[in-house]
Length: 353
Image (tube, rainbow, N blue to C red):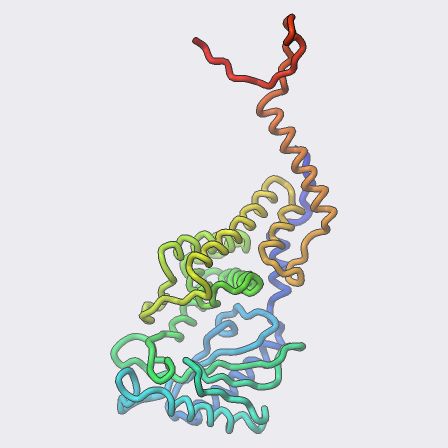
């Protein structure tokens, strides 16, 4: 087979792309500073409370440009006033919002802190991005109480409460990062970027929850991506993703119908499979081109030169034709007499009587 000798691998290409979407140190530093300021204001307001961190920064899989940060405060409830069937979270959320406004005003000015109409979190708008060119930087703040009768927390759901275990979620992800030598976070970052560049059929937590079951050892990026798509398609074919902490009643919601999400995942896996197959056969330009289609973001992964793609596709087609000819044989020439003498015919199967 005539092919172009590879000078680079898919793994190198995707590693270069991964570095382009990593968050810069200045972004992380500023985001953590703002998160810490919010945490301090909340602990000052709710004596004997504890704060926890969650989301992409806490999990090590944040994408650039960095747009938000997540944290929560667990408020003591010694008299068991709050919880399902008791007082809702409204007054706790309003106290938290007031504390954030007062505690951060000197350094960050008049923040926009939104409570009304929000399902779970308080939204803090800094009106000052941490990444150049972005419109804003925000924080999602959860005001929670401990569940006295079981694992995890009660977190707001408008005027009532839902069970969740965000502290366990962060523990699970951090453990996965440790046992995979950070490969978990690297694969997840690429998956989150794929999701963002392909109509966002899933939330980030669903991606990570599925990855917890299949990215369980150090892995290269391409095999890690492939393992996740295989697992995600299989899992979602059975049903929506359950809470990895085993606490939340409902599974993780999708951003489209399950059928549509499976369809998109399947089409993405087909592109990834083609890229892997092309590389295996020595067509690295075609492999690169398929991977660029897979990620669908020319800034993160520019496609190869179109002329190079056409040239390598021509080589591939020629090689395939040669292979087919060798497999099926050359046409046979009849040397008899009569009307059919000299007629060219293809190979035929002869059946004995």
